[in-house]
Amino acid sequence: MFSTSFSPVRARRRRLPVTASLLLFAGVALAGCSDTTGSAGIAANISIVSGSSQSGTVGTAVASPLVVKVTDSHGDAVSGAAVTFASTASGTIGSPTVTTGADGKAQTSFILGPTAGTQIVTATVAGVTTPTSFSFTALVATASAVTAVSGNNQSGAIGAQLAAALVVKAQDLLGTGVAGATINWTTTAGTLGAATTTTAANGQTQNTFTLPGTAGTATITATLNGTQIKTTFTATAN
Image 1: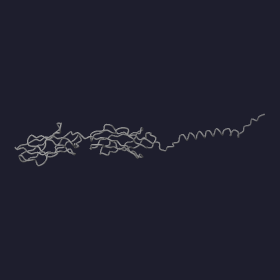
Image 2: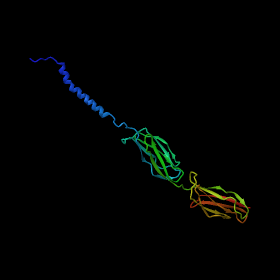
Image 3: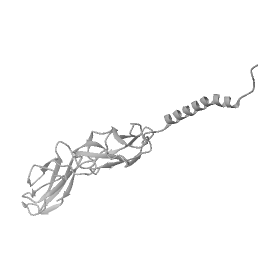
Image 4: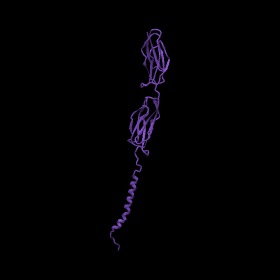
């Protein structure tokens, strides 16, 4: 008859293949979960999303915000990265430092500096050696006012030239001088040195005035060409 006694040795031998299979499975699973890159989630690149190549009058805000995106070495968005924006043309950054959101994006606003021409705003993030740059075109401002700077309320001998020139300034809405503006001069009496003059880089221009041949007060008007924007001077001949 066959023996029905239990053999521990045989049982252990039958379990060995099962144990080995479990260990192998666990090893494969752990290997699949390990991160071999060592750089996931670390800022590696910053790029422009939108807002570059805008134009506007000097001293005014550009229409659209400046938007950048920070990504890691795999191109995935990096949240919580501090992005620093800086202007090279004395422009005004709305928020100089902005933290990226879950989508890796950060944005700010920009007011163009006072100098016409190309203006640059750079965006940098720690750990990324190459910043990204926005480029803007600042346009010459349009004069919206003409003001008397000096030379008003002078007096002198009949027929004499005033001792000081009549100086005016063409300026924009921010009070900044506007270069290249044409000023037309007229008078109720006496003689002007020129019928028209052009403003310099500081927005100023000047004219001479010779008092009339009879005693009395003359009114001199300086008008921005093509507009009704003007200022006046008075001069008295004694």
